[in-house]
Length: 320
Image (tube, rainbow, N blue to C red; front, side, top):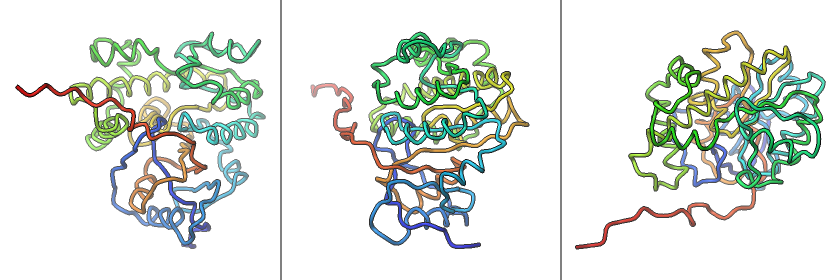
């Protein structure tokens, strides 16, 4: 097998779409994973501004090669760190290049069952489909959705409403819509995936999450994934490829939407691309990523304050 065709891209932060301290849980190094680690962490000190890596063999590839490899796929799942404009610019470029296929697009940022019209002012159109400009820090995603509109394809909402997510955390399975509950039941997570999801939720809350909330938050995460998978099924009725825009935690193969698509769309060709940052990593972490995504697109990090510095600490009872 040839040596990885890359130099050191610097360090990266695996993440689920939200800025966090991002502890990664180690997996055993496979041969492909070792090559990936060498590709990401090889000789050199200067961080490259961008790197695309195929996790199957650890090889670095260019944008045009990635485009060639995406041809013929029915489902293209594109992750993101929500506050990183480099990720949105890269995915906007992909949408422009894939526009000839007239893809249907499903977005985590819009509500399930709603569609953008493609007409009028962009932000107003997105808001009519459930986009929350404050929550998504508009205009961070503006370039992405401008590119989505230019494809000419339908833009579908995929996410459950925020109030429903809160209800699921509080009430559990009783709050699930019937179709979402059925999708989750049809594609249960194995023990390892379930534990990884729970640990990632804890990490994304800076280790301050009360244990009593973890089951509800895990179910809400799966409900989001199930809703987006069902939206993908609807979008496939267009007869065109479907592109999903969502956080990395939703597109990863071990506990994300691919688990549901394996049951719902078993004959469809799909690919998952994780968008990461060149700011933290080690070899074991790099190897772990090989099982989560088909490709890694590594960009410069976004400028942000460590969110854990401002994360509220749990209340403790005063001493008697």
